[in-house]
Image (cartoon, rainbow, N blue to C red; front, side):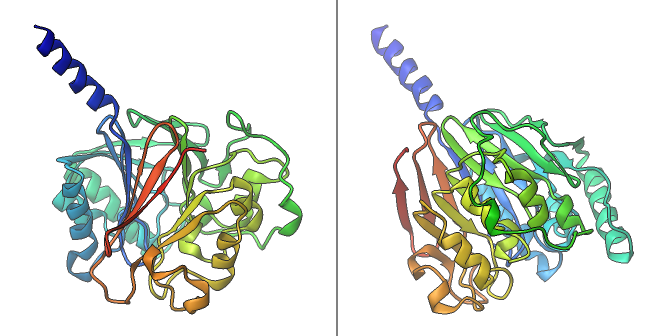
Length: 335
């Protein structure tokens, strides 16, 4: 009887101790990030490109299988651009989807906008999926973690998140740029919290919208892992935002020839307190001096095998980052 009780306790303890896992999938300069919470529920953030003989759909499916998933509970479409929503029909042809999350209808018009909107509608119908529209301040119901929407459809949270709200001393080092009327500025950005661990993904939010979240006061606070905004392009990654949220680690979902802009890479690498920058691809534009050591880069060549980066995080704030290409892993202690 005692042995049975001990085994039951160990099984419960094992279930509680599961880490949060985040897979940064190589979709060649687009976004597709798979999050598996300690509860086992999953959320895929964006779905990569269309075409390429189903390349991105295949890579997402492969990653889902690695994660032991039979379905994806939530698919968050951050905004209606080809490299973020284009692969949606590939996805539903391969994986069961529970709910699609958006900021509402596409704010852009024209032929390509219509094509992308129609593709999403077909995918929702094919998957027989539910839909959820979110706005700033909403929580995404991913069990086991807290996912707070901080920006969506051009709006942002108005009040600081718990523990945040302090003046940002970096605000004088950047200024507003010309307003961005595109879907990039309407991206859904969110902060995910698992115990003491904090991860932020702002999709393709551009400079002015980043500044609104951190200037004059930082409404977000510090984070552990930062997915660099807009694939590491310098239309985003405003210095007051990046330095203001003080990531311990940054991950860049760039392609060989997309993202990884030298000015943005410089801002990220010079962030006070940053331990490491990890990159999905070696950035040709940034060259040897701008890129981190090869150890921290998942794909060294333009036409590589689609290696990804994985983060596993404990609720005490410690986490590890793993490079699929070379099997290199680095652990980061809790603050």
